[in-house]
Image (cartoon, rainbow, N blue to C red):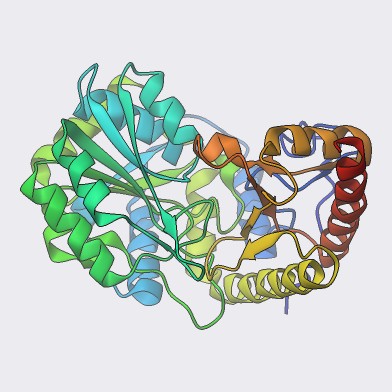
Length: 386
């Protein structure tokens, strides 16, 4: 048994999440849980060697991913398909540069991870958006709109699987239809599957590469960083079955100098993937209980907030539109006046300023404190904005 009530003190270690003194951070997708002890031991062992020079990516790094994905997600990768990168985000930006041209349209399903926009716009490509539709129970694609945007000069789809921030687990049927439409229109699918292992007990996500036809047109990015909170070690693997696509992507990663790992990432990731099943299962149960607490709290205390419960992610996507359609203003108000920091919904798509995102990968005590601040803060926000 691991202790998820214990959280690391990162108030004085240059943490991005904890950079604001006195502010309870429930925003960026970064866990507060104490790192799995076996990972810390692996890093210490490597540190004790005392030399930190350039390091090649070892075969056992890829083999750990292969075994983990076969064991947990019932999909098998060939080691020859895999390429190391210093992270999913650097890889996505590099792939956008290498696999598309300036001015190309790249499709996003919104709401979606805000950094996707940066990877597109910073490289002088255009963002196309198809908004997911909420039917009261789940988010779904508007297939007519999706297909129209794929046909209209789109060269790449960035798929988030599971979907951040709404937590949608794409069904096999949905993935098959997405692949078929993209393949018919020569559109590359870049699938970010970094959140793959953060699912509620009894649920699984479906890898894009479990769809046979996806192997011809897709690039999948995976990592141990999100589910084991190792983002600071900067590592990821790209899985690309198509040899022509793989060669181009590999050239781009090397040109952009994001193809080499640091001396600690390989052993840390390998340890997580080889030994972390129990830790991961317990973490998912803990987050699930935090979600249940959140749901009950809102139903009792803040009925005007609609929480779409999802079976993936440790993030909660909450509709605050009955309070305000300016979540940027609300989040800044709560941060400045009640010392709690949530993510505003506008950054995930232009139509979603009536939502906030809450990070639940923290202790239950922090969840309780954050929600109490939210309750008091929204009451005062409404009074101040009559």
